[in-house]
Image (cartoon, rainbow, N blue to C red; front, side, top):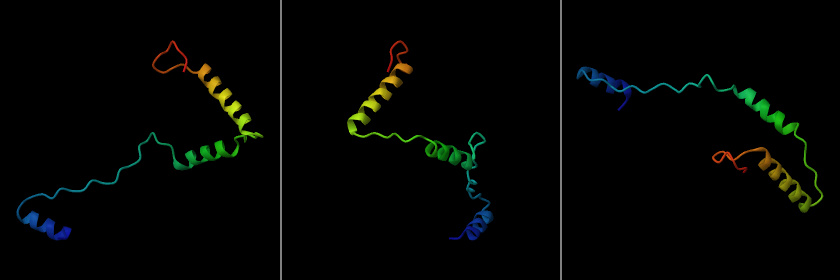
Length: 83
């Protein structure tokens, strides 16, 4: 049954048809898409590439980064201890 006919029948019976809601609008706190894409491109394009000669060298570098992060950041729930 099409919408016009349904509305006409409901109107004759003095009933109301539930109307569909409009589309959801973007919230004011969201950034524009172009700004997010520019930030992503800037981070990926200008980030230095890590050049390693072996997987052992890569593993040592990753371990160093993890330990450096653990020293710099505290555990979110247990403030007295590190990660």
